[in-house]
Image 1 (cartoon, rainbow, N blue to C red):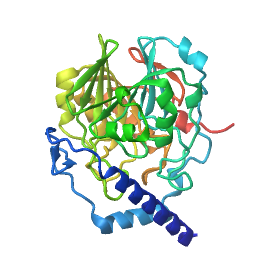
Image 2 (image 1 turned 180 degrees about the vertical axis):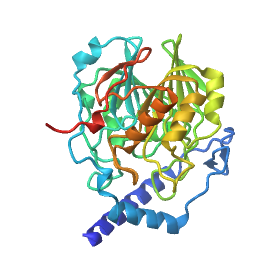
Image 3 (image 1 turned 90 degrees about the vertical axis):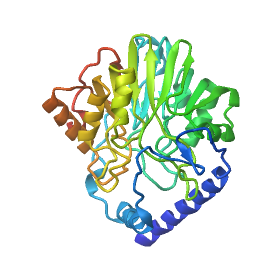
Length: 358
């Protein structure tokens, strides 16, 4: 079995190496303050793990992970239909899985980091597999006003989903370089806007600002940090939503909060963390602090409950962030996948991850 898994790992590396060759010719952005030497960088240096540590982590991921990183029972999902979404109140939000969130604003739909494939991987025969089906398929979704992308990792940028969404989506908003990847995949260039940090665009009266995050990018062995990563600030008149994408904790959250807060709702990365990679993913304590830095009113934890991407139990992010929120008197909402939440007046949700089958 270990030999088979090693063959699968080598197959993935071969595919990602091919992907890297394709993306190695991506345009550079010499005018971006974030790019130096053809690569994007965080303001504060983030240590690289090195080959040996990377190989050791890969071995643990493939051969020595704790059993409870995957649920032992079905994850509860509320199925959605197009009719339900069209009838939903304006300023609603729905978790569809991981960091894929559907927002309804001004009667139109916006989709963050759409991942609908069975696996968050360059291939669909290996790699992290979904715990649950999406609450609604792409074919059943109503027309999408815009897709908002944070970066190009496989659990945030799904090639198959982008191809399916292209025909029903009017706008694609992406960080620098990610937009070029979309165009290379066949998305019409006039639908794509790619932004540097602090740049903004307005679509039908809603303003979208690409705000900083502390992370990295890459889909293969040779394209590391060739594209930018970002969080997003969404401003709809008096309504303010923050989407974190992926990020380690950094002082940029306070800067964003000072500039654009307070936020009615923060969609905050809470999962796939580990003390072995502290600079690129936040521990729950840091997620809560980032929410406070942003001057958020309600916290909705995302980046959890769908894929096995770390060494913690699958439910630990929910256990820890809800306990911390209760301790600090922070309003938190934990909806089931597919459950509607009012952005301006969320409900608390339930501890659905603790429910047992009857």
